[in-house]
Length: 315
Image (cartoon, rainbow, N blue to C red; front, side):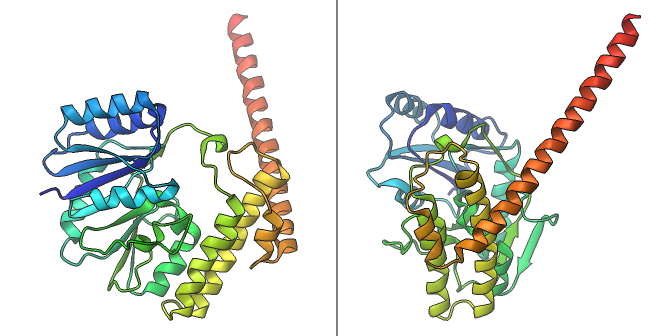
């Protein structure tokens, strides 16, 4: 029996997946206590050759070629897992040394109560752990971080629906479970993102995903009586600021990306005030440029100081 299943849905980019796999297999964790499940819906032969070789050398590594499109590959990986505790791992994130043992211990510590668990990787304030007793509290604390599939964790006993009501975020079915008695957000640092940029992040419509599909998922929870109006409004406010940051990055600054930005005004305007988003984006943009200018000034000051020091040493 495996205590932990590390599920990695991927489209098979070797430059990412090789260091990710190495970051796991190089750790001291007992391989009889965890498995790695790789579900691949890509067509990269170099990756297929690599991962098949890894799977042949490690009994706890399984590789599956999936026909699932896009994000639905996540669900294929989850269904193939056999461990007591299932942890999603993004194919661009390596696990820090010791993280596998930590995740196995989490499975052992919580396997009786089986609370809802989510991993925010040191992005949610200064606290290391948040223990919440109501779904509303959990939703408010998590905010728009629930959109990040990298934090997903659940139990093998938890149901995986055959169909998801979110096109872009199928993992929400596992992250937002209103039937749990306890909710735990683990904010410790367990992952590191590999160097990348927004030109390699995905080809979906960014604002349709976040301003429409993602928000509608929460609306459906409210209409079903699963969250309060207060929780919905809190989420909408936080999501609004996140949309402003996306607008600042990709519309105002025209940061190169692989996303589709088609119809962004229409998508934002469906549920949010477009002018407010633009104003907040302008504020963020101004702050960002001010911070960038400050950093450049500090770098120049350090450079001048180093030059003066070296000049003095030569004399």
